[in-house]
Image (cartoon, rainbow, N blue to C red):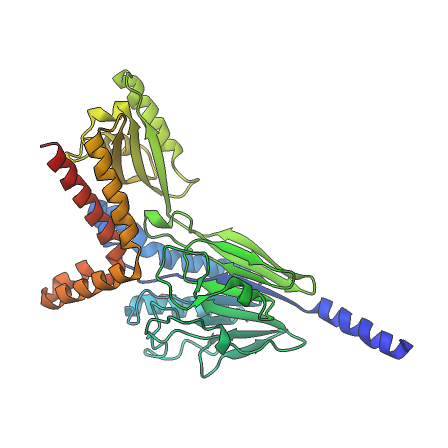
Length: 418
């Protein structure tokens, strides 16, 4: 190889090595998401959760400034609906303005929840806020090209990937997508995509949103991260509470989860022996509840009391909840979500009820069930007074289904044991 060609190759390699980009990646803020079912059980906790997502956004901005990132990336569902209240919009506007004052742009896409959102309804968010959609799928920031497509409000049943731009040669390429990667569950399958196809598209990093549990997928030349929900909203989002710091250079992309959640959700099983003195049981259970707190964060616990000793409590009458609730009152930062009872030596009729409950839980995961449930909710809202319609908000569907399953199981148990 001629010496001049060798020098050009070496220079090209070194230029690639010198390219670098630091990002803070978040998604699924759901800034105006309701917490009505929690608020009904614990008004103080409901109010804390109502403001938690906004406080978490402030923490995200603090982190972006502290870690001196080149951009904040928001991969969809910043709001919970397409028409958020003016307060939530103001919180976002103030947050991105703080970043803009530090020279940090915010790059975002709309998700399935806020796909119909008009970001400019109350005026532009600012020159430092860049929304990617089909009219503008790519923007360049420093050494990187960012590519993304926003949802449009209708259910997306096909992969977005074929519509994404090809990578820009000689630059770092970052993709933003709000989607359902293969192998994930627990969410409606909007914009399904193949992880192998994503990693093979030629981008250095994929900033993903939609699934509320953090996950990473890596190939030799690319990294895809589902950042998860920064602030969980209920017990099924116990794996949330973080955002992702990303460094990309000639050596590839490296990601680090940074905790930001202000309220934690945990599930715990509480064994109940058959023979245990009341004072011993009380002391043991109090210590277990205290140990269930997640660090210094206020923690919402769902407790399953199990074993033969649980037979002394009646789940239907609320005895178990009152027992644990009295103990939790003296433990700072611990709140009870629900108390479930599973006694030992379950009789055959109870086992049949349990099997039926499991079958119902499988059925409610199907898209057809959810579509029908959302239709029924919409019909009910149409006939309710306006002040009551929010009680049946579609955002509460998972909680309504859970409460319905519990009520049906309790009714079946009572029928078997009149």
